[in-house]
Length: 181
Image (tube, rainbow, N blue to C red; front, side, top):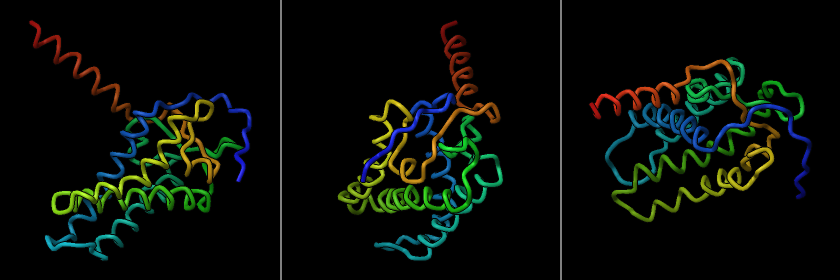
């Protein structure tokens, strides 16, 4: 498999930390919804996995397709997902491919975080997600993770959003100034 490089469009790139925070917001929402159905028994619970998968697809495919390329986490941090070639919101099939790959990693992260206290080796379930998203750190041109390369998508900054990260920074700066007084 060869990776073709195309000239990057002139979109503002998103820092890796902001991408992690947006993923974390989406993951937390889906994980909380699916954990409501969990029990305290050991092992993997199939109903919880099914609810996680459905909620992930709704939040990261249907909402993104209908919301100009933004999920709740990406809207909170002013980002959107676009197709590399057209510069538009990807179609449903492309979003489904992309989110199926990252969704498996997110599901393994949810299983690991639910079982980490009882079984510390569950931390190894995070490795596929770390490998997938870790490639974005080494990609200096387009900052694409493996799921982005496969689906030919890119995460870019958007003007539309809530700017949660900027609002939190301002709030912390104000809090620091007030503490110093």
